[in-house]
Image (cartoon, rainbow, N blue to C red; front, side, top):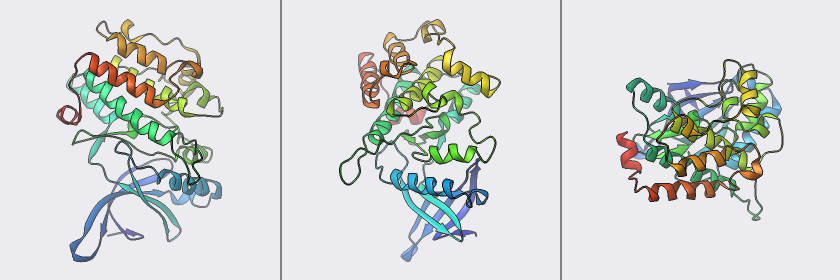
Length: 297
């Protein structure tokens, strides 16, 4: 069995334009065993000093995040010239896989579960956005890649945000490898697409796209080409969910349209504000939603 540092690589789970993902095992004395996930930077990128430096620096920052709605990073290492991150293993399906399964089964995710999922995502985002260094200075951490693939829904009904902190390195890798960012433009904020300086509100916009697509059961910005998708993000009018479904709760529509405002000064200032509005909508409607209901769905 292949090893990477002190981890046994059990099987490859996925490969992207930047890294490979493995299910791995850590073993120790007296039969100690822990399953986790190892993300290994592709060998073809290991010679790019800027990418490696950014990958390692962002991983070090993300390792400071400890929150139930964020996948925990345990270790950052190098073995045989290969760089890797060891992180929490979450038995789960990502939100995109769940959406596709729901389409096949002709079952929509209920409004209450959509609100629950995004409330959890916002909790994780707010924790990260508020992260400070040892001198109590804000780190200004922004996820930059809040997409369905990075929202994990565990079989126990938990919601966890993955890949926090490596989006800059992924973007840099896109300059050396075609296709790394393919499919991600549909979840970027207008300011991110324009290459402007980003803050927490760019993640709020992305969360708004997720919520919109869960409510409306259709893609919001995705078009047949990346150029057309970018145009849609920047300037195509966004129809309110009530124009697509006639039973959308007013509170849910208000939340999603505020999060999707192209003028970031008009969005929620913090992910916590969006989370509190989602929780209020859940309470207002008397919805029962939580890990148990999510797991059943």
